[in-house]
Image (cartoon, rainbow, N blue to C red; front, side):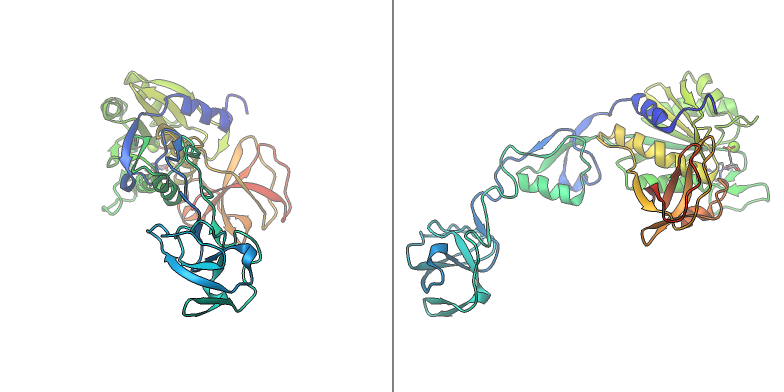
Length: 396
Ligand code: AMP
Ligand code: MG
């Protein structure tokens, strides 16, 4: 189908609309899920000296199988008081510095102790250096631990803390406005007439952004009224980095997002993508804000938010790899061939196998509750048999 932008090209153009916002220094309590602005280098060796990995006795490997005389102890938090000389062993605990002279640790389960006399009762360590963590074996001073644009998971925060800092420069969280459009929409939970429906897209999109580094304001709503929409867009653009509209993106008489964007002084960068669902996606700029116009059908909004909104937010927040990862798994059932647009089939990944959900109607919401993956079917893809490997994105 001509005139439709391939997904990857559209994603690249969307991210090119604005560079990452800016950086700020934050403490660990505020940085989970955010992206490092700079390379994080270790300020120190970890560990700073050889330490024991077990509770036991520090000895010289060449003196195995002993016996030894126990001279003092080395516990975590204090330096060992002396050297281990020939014939000697030192009591040692996990995390304690290995005294000079010793090169191996025997675990306490392998020995018998009688006063200061230490004897081996089992095989003992088979190699020199056993149960010792060498200096800098975790990381060395000046080593790059986290490259710029790394997502700060709890594990990454642990590495940063161990590196010797207590604050990190991270990308500022983009301010995101969600704007629903449509005369038929009513806030979820309110009374409805037969011609009205609850707004399911704003709670869904808010939930999708909840684990992302974004400052999401309370959702806004406008009727299908182009001048009003233009006014609201202009106003939201003053206070947000991203405006994500939902609905009104297509060609119907009541689809006003493109027209209103232009009326408000904004520019459209692209419209219409070679994907299903989600073809009428709009991207543009209004003042400094990026406008992303998602189609209103719940599955279309979900798929386009996954492929465009989340990467945009991550990119603005400083991510190096903002796009959802693509994985491979075998199909549990046969799959019909693809069409003129790339399909993102709502699917279930169970026991390592992918099953597209029975209904792929983009107007449905219930399949979204069942789906935990988007199964990707390329343009004009041939029919696939059960067991063939397919690409997918994890969504839940
Ligand atoms: P539109 O993109 O405005 O043409 O809307 C396409 C379909 O999605 C219509 O059936 C709308 O009623 C529905 N829709 C639009 N916005 C929402 C929303 N926020 N929540 C649930 N359904 C919506
Ligand atoms: Mg509409």
